Amino acid sequence: MLMSDFQYMNMEPNQSDVCPECGKQISPTDEVCPGCGTSLGLKAWERERDRLKRLWVISVAFFWFSVIFQGTLFVLDGTLNLVLLSVIGGMMILGLILKFRLQYHERRKPQQ
Ligand SMILES: [Zn+2]
Image (tube, rainbow, N blue to C red; front, top):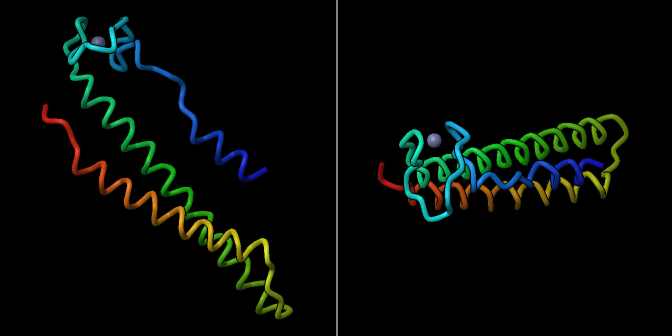
Protein backbone atom coordinates (compact mmCIF):
# COMPACT_ATOMS: atom_id res chain seq x y z
CA MET A 1 0.00 0.00 0.00
CA LEU A 2 2.65 2.50 1.07
CA MET A 3 5.02 1.45 -1.72
CA SER A 4 2.29 1.78 -4.36
CA ASP A 5 1.53 5.29 -3.09
CA PHE A 6 5.20 6.06 -3.38
CA GLN A 7 5.33 4.79 -6.96
CA TYR A 8 2.21 6.75 -7.78
CA MET A 9 3.85 9.98 -6.62
CA ASN A 10 6.86 9.19 -8.77
CA MET A 11 4.75 9.45 -11.89
CA GLU A 12 4.00 12.79 -13.41
CA PRO A 13 1.59 13.62 -16.20
CA ASN A 14 3.30 14.49 -19.45
CA GLN A 15 3.08 18.27 -19.74
CA SER A 16 5.80 18.68 -22.33
CA ASP A 17 3.51 19.92 -25.12
CA VAL A 18 1.82 22.68 -23.09
CA CYS A 19 3.45 25.77 -21.58
CA PRO A 20 3.43 25.42 -17.76
CA GLU A 21 2.89 29.17 -17.40
CA CYS A 22 0.13 30.07 -19.88
CA GLY A 23 -1.08 26.64 -21.10
CA LYS A 24 -0.42 27.44 -24.75
CA GLN A 25 0.52 24.63 -27.14
CA ILE A 26 4.27 24.41 -27.71
CA SER A 27 6.50 22.15 -29.78
CA PRO A 28 9.22 20.06 -28.08
CA THR A 29 11.92 22.05 -29.91
CA ASP A 30 10.81 25.44 -28.52
CA GLU A 31 13.37 27.00 -26.15
CA VAL A 32 10.94 29.68 -25.03
CA CYS A 33 7.15 29.73 -25.11
CA PRO A 34 5.85 31.57 -28.23
CA GLY A 35 2.91 32.80 -26.14
CA CYS A 36 4.43 34.28 -22.98
CA GLY A 37 8.22 34.00 -23.49
CA THR A 38 8.83 31.71 -20.50
CA SER A 39 12.13 29.84 -20.69
CA LEU A 40 10.95 26.25 -21.07
CA GLY A 41 14.29 24.64 -20.31
CA LEU A 42 14.38 26.41 -16.96
CA LYS A 43 10.77 25.50 -16.22
CA ALA A 44 11.43 21.85 -16.96
CA TRP A 45 14.53 22.00 -14.76
CA GLU A 46 12.53 23.54 -11.90
CA ARG A 47 9.82 20.90 -12.23
CA GLU A 48 12.40 18.09 -12.09
CA ARG A 49 14.14 19.71 -9.09
CA ASP A 50 10.83 20.03 -7.21
CA ARG A 51 9.99 16.41 -8.03
CA LEU A 52 13.36 15.16 -6.74
CA LYS A 53 13.07 17.32 -3.64
CA ARG A 54 9.56 16.02 -2.94
CA LEU A 55 10.66 12.39 -3.31
CA TRP A 56 13.66 13.02 -1.09
CA VAL A 57 11.50 14.58 1.67
CA ILE A 58 9.12 11.58 1.44
CA SER A 59 11.95 9.05 1.74
CA VAL A 60 13.44 10.91 4.73
CA ALA A 61 10.00 11.08 6.37
CA PHE A 62 9.49 7.32 5.81
CA PHE A 63 12.96 6.66 7.19
CA TRP A 64 12.39 8.56 10.45
CA PHE A 65 8.87 7.24 10.85
CA SER A 66 10.21 3.64 10.63
CA VAL A 67 13.14 4.42 12.94
CA ILE A 68 10.81 5.88 15.59
CA PHE A 69 8.30 3.05 15.18
CA GLN A 70 11.01 0.38 15.43
CA GLY A 71 12.62 2.19 18.36
CA THR A 72 9.32 2.25 20.22
CA LEU A 73 8.74 -1.47 19.50
CA PHE A 74 12.22 -2.30 20.74
CA VAL A 75 11.79 -0.29 23.94
CA LEU A 76 8.35 -1.78 24.65
CA ASP A 77 9.02 -5.50 24.07
CA GLY A 78 12.55 -5.82 22.73
CA THR A 79 11.62 -7.05 19.25
CA LEU A 80 13.14 -6.17 15.91
CA ASN A 81 10.65 -6.10 13.06
CA LEU A 82 12.19 -7.35 9.82
CA VAL A 83 9.81 -5.37 7.61
CA LEU A 84 10.54 -2.14 9.48
CA LEU A 85 14.28 -2.81 9.35
CA SER A 86 14.17 -3.29 5.58
CA VAL A 87 12.09 -0.12 5.19
CA ILE A 88 14.71 1.74 7.26
CA GLY A 89 17.56 0.37 5.12
CA GLY A 90 15.70 0.89 1.85
CA MET A 91 14.70 4.45 2.64
CA MET A 92 18.22 5.28 3.76
CA ILE A 93 19.64 4.08 0.41
CA LEU A 94 16.82 5.74 -1.56
CA GLY A 95 17.34 8.99 0.37
CA LEU A 96 21.05 8.96 -0.44
CA ILE A 97 20.43 8.24 -4.14
CA LEU A 98 17.85 11.03 -4.36
CA LYS A 99 20.19 13.42 -2.56
CA PHE A 100 22.97 12.68 -5.06
CA ARG A 101 20.57 13.03 -8.00
CA LEU A 102 19.37 16.36 -6.61
CA GLN A 103 22.93 17.66 -6.21
CA TYR A 104 23.77 16.52 -9.75
CA HIS A 105 20.61 18.20 -11.03
CA GLU A 106 21.43 21.49 -9.22
CA ARG A 107 24.72 21.70 -11.10
CA ARG A 108 22.95 21.41 -14.47
CA LYS A 109 20.70 24.44 -14.05
CA PRO A 110 20.07 26.04 -17.47
CA GLN A 111 21.04 29.69 -17.89
CA GLN A 112 18.09 32.07 -18.14
ZN1 LIG B 1 3.62 30.38 -22.18
